[in-house]
Image 1: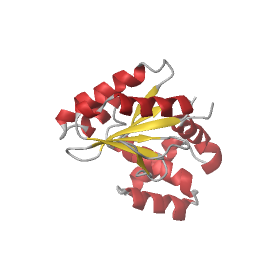
Image 2 (image 1 turned 45 degrees about the vertical axis):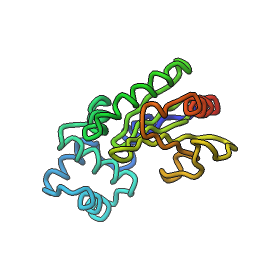
Image 3 (image 1 turned 120 degrees about the vertical axis):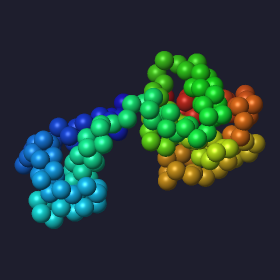
Length: 188
């Protein structure tokens, strides 16, 4: 099983002292003393003044800003924020999750800032409230031809091969669940 993004991030965090010469706490003290607040400014300072590589500088800056803002949002807070101005869609989201949970106990539901990632061994779908009236269901499907509700092409920079646009809960029908289940099966 491939490591998750969270596992890879934790590995980088664990390697900060060895790869940068300072602990994360020491970097936080340096950033705080600099009085810089913007991510780009912190990133530039770490790279130019301290020779930190881009990947580690980006991670350190992001973690510092996250801590300064009170820590990472919980999964529930992330989902609530996604639907804060689209309350009619929360029932669509909950309906999709209920269906996905029927596929098997190995489904991982991972809310992000703008969407929710559904993973098995790897990501197989994304649920995203894209506009005030449309939810997009991104799917990773091998060799599937577009047709019916299935739209070819990706909208998320290579994260999904297909998508389905949903404008009401009634549109979450057997065809939509079938495509979602196919993506789940292919991820195993």
